[in-house]
Image (tube, rainbow, N blue to C red; front, side):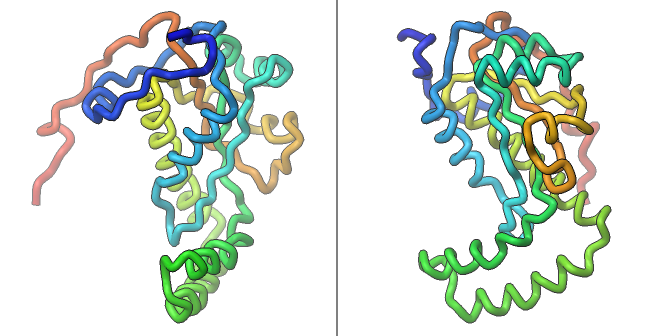
Amino acid sequence: MDTTTGQSNRTNDFDNIVLERRSVKVYNPEVKISREELSEILAKATRAPSAINMQPWRFLVIDSAEGKEKLAPLASFNQTQALTSSAVIAVFYDAENIAYMDEIFSKSVELGYMPQDIKEMQMQQAQPFYASMSPSDLRDMNLIDSSLISMQLMLVARAHGYDTNPMAGYDKDRIAEVFGLDKERFQPVMLISIGKAFKDGHPSYRLPVDTITTWA
């Protein structure tokens, strides 16, 4: 298979997806992933859970040469990933995601996922719940939800035959405005590079389950 065309070696082997995932630092720069396939990966990732199904995550997909040149100075500790990967997905959360509450619940009714009376009850509960949350609690909730989808995105990418690397080493204060986003509304979570490894990622030690688990 020609790996430069954006076609991937997909797998449904869950053990392979989970146990063989590695954080890759250097990618094959000749490999391109089509926006169609990237959209498919993102769509599958959005099956991740979120509080009250509010889906606060937002994506900035940086896959053009121009976009990567903008990103490189912001990702000084991760320039190799930024410049050699097929794309870098910047994950944000939308601080104003409550604006989509009515659409989310109304569409659920339209699709038959919930009855109208349940929608109305949940709206009546959810709106004051969000209004009463402190900024720090709301941020924590949105970060948790956005982290869930970020991990799911990496597993979906692995199922499509691609490698990834989550990155926190970038200029979070500037990334939104550099790419023309409202920096007050769109809050950075992480960068995720995606592509085909040029150098395999290294295996890493994991603490035993007995060390990290308490049974009650």
